[in-house]
Image 1 (cartoon, helix red, strand yellow):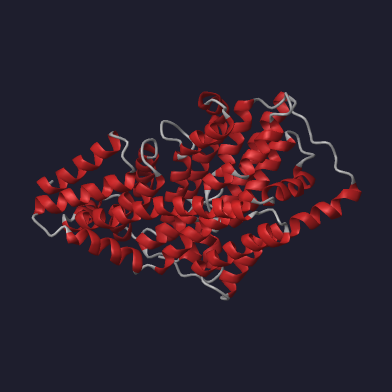
Image 2 (tube, rainbow, N blue to C red):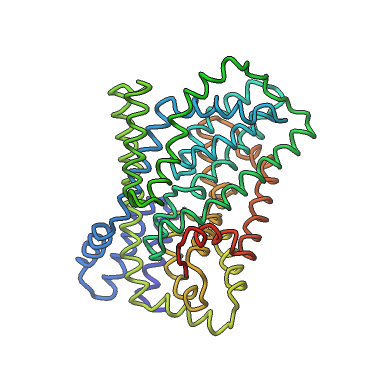
Length: 432
């Protein structure tokens, strides 16, 4: 390892230990690298500008963030919740089952795990805590686990970013997440059913038939968004990036015009929060461009590929190794850092072994979602604690069955790539 690369890693590590924002740590590390190499630090601006302004797909990120915040600020979450009570509320542990189904539907609109936990998740936690049969830890664990569906079921912000760094098709990645996402939901509902049966958790009171039409009417327009988005993408009406703009417009019309749930002050707050969230992501993206320039200049991806080739790993052994690596790194690092720093270093090795990049991408995103629900980083745990006050320890004690289920599904997806690739291939996408 060269001195310059060592300085880069040391500066970045120091920034993280000092709790400097991740994007600033990455940019400072890049500047330190260029100074030690004796290169013009103007390369930082060049790499950042070229990276940000030459990638049309990045427009999808702030637009999906805006759409998710609009739906959380309006009454969309409550309307979907009422609809799901009709469908699964009569099952044992009905409110927990409702939360999972709500997450499936909301995932088709937002593409964000944090938005899922902060919106529909908060609604269902409040409902569960009204009944003594649901402990706070269990309520929080269900919401945290179901929020991981957000980036797996399309659309997905992490998959958009992965497409940026890998060159894989966004449309194929979105389709690749459908079957795994539905499997996750069904397995979670199975876990809830087992726990609810053992603890004799209640079923929801039946909703009178005369109220069904009104509830279906209230939920029809929000439920139409996933159909509009995915139908538009795969019919060719618009691209995945343009779908993000359609999602934002759809959410704005629903919350502001149809439901009249947005005041000008609320809309201003949504815009401010969306701008803040998008700026954080953009700053991390900016830092990743200069880091990737440094790693490429030092030949790190190529060295990684040669190391893998020297180990004579099979595709399966490589993917299992990647799973272990990302599960370990997910304990300490943010999803954006994993996607933008570590994935580009592994891609040459994946290509060398002939690993399908769509399969690889969905596996990587699921690994990162698992990282969001276990400490010490566990961003979803911290978000849920901040919103509800439920101790992280209680959520972890109740959440281990969901964590084991996700790990089992990750192993199944690794062993059987067609779980991911069947739908993209059926829809005519050629993956590699």
